Length: 149
View (cartoon, rainbow, N blue to C red):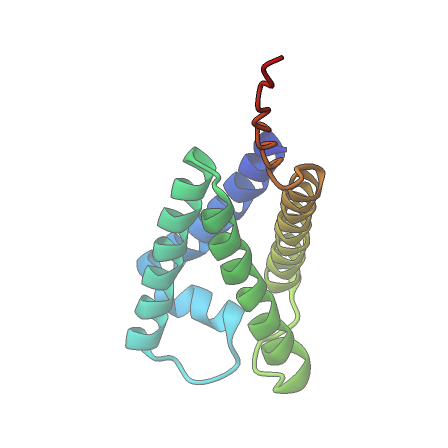
């Protein structure tokens, strides 16, 4: 399972690296792809930098996928999915084009997989805890009094 989590994280890292570099290198062009609103260099650059922060978290998680780091990565990707759902379908400020829909589907797939891996880990932890019973109490040695005959 560790290997599959690493593959999912590397895929999301590549996606976020593409968007982060694009937003920092050519903010005007790629902001039009992501938003129907007015262009703002500060917001666009901060979003690109935020994607690099997620890349660092995902790289740490891919290197050492502990439960806590996987939980943080899953929460981050899931948050991106919910924000994308809101922006695409409720407020309609993010256009539905090939780039945004593909990114959304990759994020959704990674979020579902990471959340499933957390559930699997939790179930394993629960199984091992139920298999282990409480430590057996040591029987007290009975003191037999030797009777003299």
